[in-house]
Length: 428
Image 1 (tube, one colour):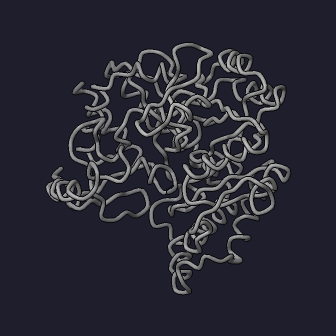
Image 2 (cartoon, one colour):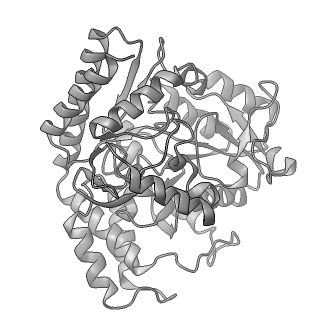
């Protein structure tokens, strides 16, 4: 495929935007080459500035669960825009989408809307610290909760040491309050808790990881976290920015029947517009301003266009819950097809899949945490990515990102993708 127009646009973008992109992974640094500039999208397909059509497996990193330009969402945005785009005042629609979200998700009484997943996770941690009156948090290596300072931390030198910044601009003072644990390792978490008795406000986790590829929790892991938190007066925060309303109407809490104390949302809840949210039971949420002392605010929080898009999306998911079964079946079909052709071509790999999240790791062993994900063959992934792109299939330009399946994709699209993977893998 030819990407002449995209290449030129990237050159122009680099002159006025750092790295030519507004989100680093889009720069293709992990895979090399020039990023693709999109002109439009519909259903399961992207159409770039050079006129190429691509089957889309990132779907705006998750929100397009029902396909690009989903008509009920487009109609809702269009009609709401005619009435004004922003007021800085309450609207009835905010209450309507809040009530719907609370009805769909277990174990939450109230929800606060913000503008991004980063903002949701940042606010959830502040609320947890204020509510518990403790400072430290535990996060997991490989789990991404946005670019707030508290989350840009790398592991310390030992199991019980505090972290250190992994980005300039993050202070060591901030880093000392973030403890780094190993995903799917309860013993490691217990060690951190024991070494920091009565100092930990919250454990924040992607209950199904998506930022080191798709990595589901091992059996008993989330249950163990819940017990550790309950036993030690620690709040359990589920970062469901990816998984919320995608893996089940009520997210991972519903899927695995595990109660979190605070849940963070993004992506699907905004219907493709910039929306995040965090939610909890009354006693926690009532600690938030203006009812309580923990401050959080945002000029565009609850923006009417974003609320209209999110409300239309949640209504569609709530009214036809067979969507989740279809997504699971399509994703399992894709996984089985990929497994068959890669094995036939003697490729070393492992596939992780849960619901409509899936990733291919070019690693010899099971991928259960960041360390095992990092053992993947990045050079093979680069060939895989560019080979598929040349065949008209667009996957995430990073080995550490999950793919997201949309209900708009057809079995013909899936067969085309499997055939493309067969063709590409023969060149490894």
